[in-house]
Length: 180
Image (cartoon, rainbow, N blue to C red; front, side, top):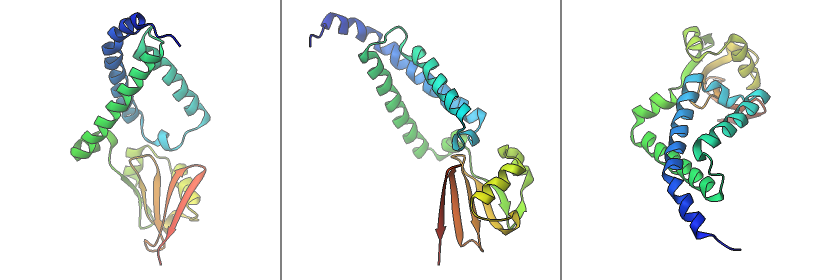
């Protein structure tokens, strides 16, 4: 395999712009996901998957521009990995920033009673709450001690006097824990 170092040198001139563009796209995506809601993250439908694939294709060009080389792609990927790593460190070091970016858990049900103002805040419908309760194996809202809309978009449910906890990960996966 022959490496054309002249081409590598030309490509490296574009690397700073690729890095800046990749970081800008990362920041844009974090803000967009925060604005448009975390509920969608936990409940990906076919149209959501298509949307994600199209977004990734659209922003790929914005990150690397005309540089469709392996090096350009690797630089963009490394910039994204490093940005994500640094961002996670910032969220850990500054919990207030984490609350701004990720939000806070929102209580939807407390001792069998809906907290309607929080449902509005979380943009969760009554049908979605009923669905989540059923997915956790509970037949009615009245039997739920606590239901929380988590920062990752999942709904956690506690029942049986706070002894039975389940967290809905996706529509196809349910985790149930029992404490004796």
